[in-house]
Image 1: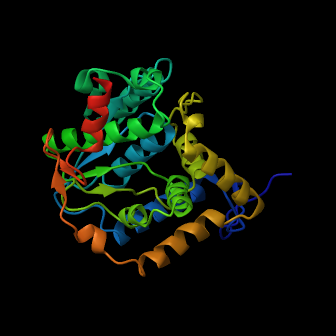
Image 2: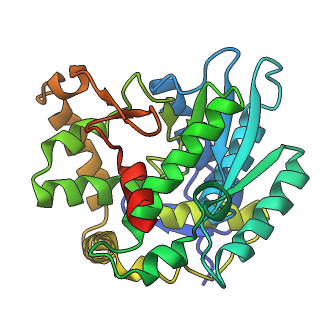
Image 3: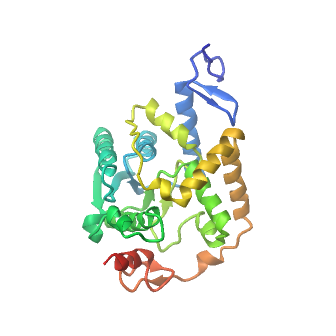
Amino acid sequence: MTVRCSKGNCKNPAIIHQKYSGLHLCENHFLDHIERKVKKEMRKGMMVERDDKIAVALSGGKDSSALLYMLNKVFCNRNDLQFVAIAVDEGIEGFRSFTLNNARRITKQLEIKLFTFSFAEEFGFTLDDVASKGFEQAPCTPCGVLRRRILDEKARELGATKVATAHNLDDEVQSIVINYIRGDIDRLRRLRGRRDEFIPRIKPLRTILEKEVALYAIAVGIPITTIHCPYAKLSYRFTVKRMLNVFEMRHPGTKYSLIRGYERLLQLLPDEQLNKQLLRCERCGEASAAGLCKACELIARMK
């Protein structure tokens, strides 16, 4: 039996049932719903401002491709804004080459400049090389450190005023829960925003569920790859992700409750950590909590 859309007198078939809201939405109403939520989040956080040049972190996966498509659609009539895409090739054999092909396709389709950089060129080694060393941390941790280094450096070189990342609601609540479990209050504070020493980051998709981002991508014709990073399952985050998905399945709305609770908690956390003066890394000169930043520390270990 075909389920009809819940919106007004719409008689179109629904493509999704949002268990947390109770709504059945057809394709048009679903796309409108997602775009409205993203625009609301961007207005709320003043994410896009006049004369911004925004570098979009583009992996070629569903989330970053959907983000680039949406930003291009929402701001297509704003002549004062510029968008470029930055892709990072970490050097993961049998994985990253597929998503980078998607990145090239969508940037060509949207007529947006794509700049690609790699761990091999920037650091002299790949993530596969890092993984082969058998460090105590899962490869996802050094991967994140080095990707951030490249995004910050290259966005600054390109004259970007902000970096847009495709973190969705699932990503956000995973980070929140990981820091709750670890009792890491400083990192909980830092989730609210970056310090002035770094190029600002914006997350327009932070209130959209991962599965809804995927459905949005399919609906607008963005190619979806079914290949996954071979290192993802080794991470602490992957365990938390599975746990949260079970909660969401049994108790719809759990993820939204978590992010709302976190935002209320933020009002009680002091800003003292954000006001502390950072040091400068003795090797690269970037702002750092210690004499040697995490990226330079990792590079030194690899060499």
